[in-house]
Length: 202
Image 1 (tube, rainbow, N blue to C red):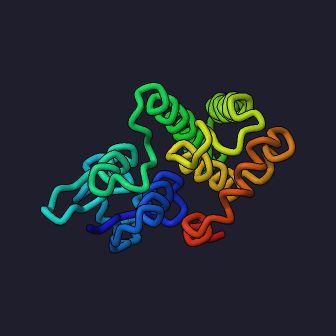
Image 2: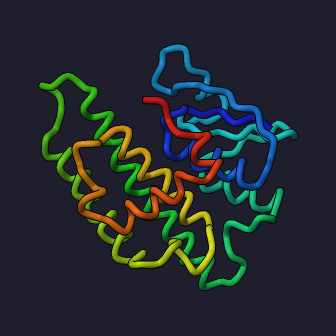
Image 3: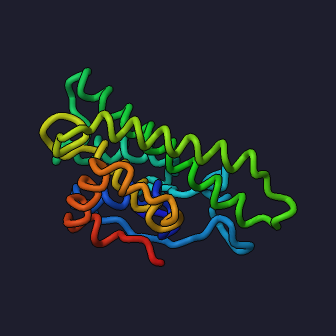
């Protein structure tokens, strides 16, 4: 398998953490989809990373599809519970974390446009999504050690990667002070080898 990814993408990092947690070998191909020489559209017509190139030459995208595939390739350690209620809870957390990451990436890209072309209203709308998403996650987490149940899951991975992206791109948000439960979770996750090995470059 080969994973086409950007080292700063929270979605690609989610897949990289899952690969490491499951002990799956996968070649990493770094490609920035915003660069003029990118090859990403050859493998994903949407021009986004991550993309997984399977051994049978099948291409998979986006991160949620890739993670589901990896769960089938190597069910253990199980990162998405088999029981329906817990499974839905994990997928809900993943959707919420991915939504926050998507809003953050949208703001980052908008701010790269010339100042005269940027939409302050659009940026504020996305920042509002980030704040509401973080508040919902922090409230749901409460004092628990993990996002869902009593064990580490995909919910923690998705959340940890999103929080890492906010640390990278939006240190001015100060989310750690406002959402101490998430800050505590992020600090615990940072100690795991898979997270330490995939910290995005500054």
